[in-house]
Image (cartoon, rainbow, N blue to C red; front, side, top):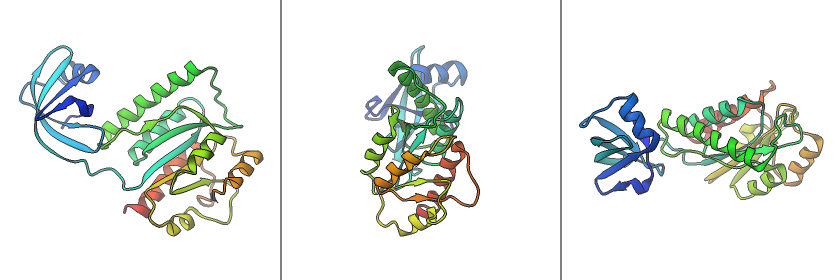
Length: 245
């Protein structure tokens, strides 16, 4: 069944209005007609089973038949701080991490990042594109919320923000003592978590010192070195297994 996100304000009693690109997609691409069913999600965890009542060029009016909790959202809200990778990789990371249940993704500018942001407008343009990727992936994977993609931050800003989570850690390729399993199995009563993934060139010595100074544990993900676009997926998969399965 077709599924679309709507703003919570678009729901009015037992009716809901779809506007913008989704309305045009319903009318011109899917060629749906009055009486056909579809699922709407308000982005806050509630799904609505609805039926098309009327269509125009810019809007689709629907009648809500029932509402229920989405049920696909993880109990622990997880944020990924991702060092900016080469072109295309960030979009892949956002797509796959959204499918795996991430709550928020914040790009991080680190010493060995290949990608450089030339201006604030450049950062805003990338963020808008990244958010559209998150939206599409959330829609495809039937998420109850669309993960937010934040503006890029420095490592210092990321580390400061990570102090506000119940659990924070940093996978590091040269760590040979503490495993991610060690950290996750000892975690108790965690409702929010954050982790930082470094760039293609790895975390520099100065950055590692800053991470250690912030008292975040560095963890190994195993005996192999993972690419920056693979590491986030691996961490989320392990967290899903430990916390939710």
